[in-house]
Image (cartoon, one colour):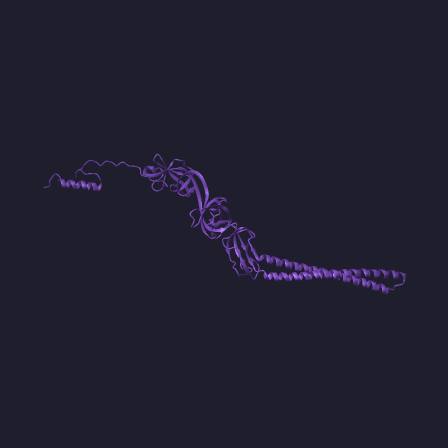
Length: 402
């Protein structure tokens, strides 16, 4: 027969089994007291209060440093040798400075030949003027002879043949005068051609001194001492006018409507610890049809570290203002309409809102929420509208809000 009472070892095993299956101690294998009901506690949800802060919304762009305006210094002369170089890359020059000098000896020889031709043309002109003078005298003499022949004919002394000879002599004298005048005009025209040739050579001689067309910084120098220049071979010097640099960046067409000229920007370049201040100078009116990008130019404040061709990143300040803000993680979307979950007296309420500026991890609530109201910091993860929750605040958990 079995004993009616349990041994101590059996009681110990029963107690351990009870702990494993529910944590409620079992007094005996027989019917015991009822298990107490467990009180339901609402889930703990972290909440944050809407705060008024200054927001600075920016747009990031990438691009290349370029000169705002460039000037090219070259020549249209052929076959001239570079005799002197007075400037190099990186030099700051003023308008009119001589950057290089070309050999002008051939042009000087041509100029001397033209001067000799001019002297000869001037002598021809003087000779033609003398011939005109002689022809005018001949015309007067012929006119006088014709007048005497007419008078004698009226008296019946001169014959018709004598009068005809006088008329022919006058016509011949006039023809000589007209020919002399035309010869003078031809000589004067020739002198004009010579003067034009001389002026052309003088212009070419002036081009043998390559001068800076504007103040600026020399970006490149392709001229070499002793090298022969050729027309159409490209610029010998490139100058950044006034030494002003800009960031040329491409921007998506969706962001272009938000940009305005003179918007402030900060431009970062590799190797610089501090960004260079700048502002938008120009926004392209055209969008590339293939890439759907538009180009902007950001003027930079003077900085010796900027180099044409540098890669750079710009942060354009779109908005700077104070407003009621919440973490970005508190915002949810339903069919592109934003809303958040506020917590009022331990109950979750879904509220549509209107968003404003975005600054990093925080977003402005333009309407739909007031300063100080609490919202679920990471909305929509575990709770729905009307749920009861236990709010857990940053000061309660010791967490540090970003």
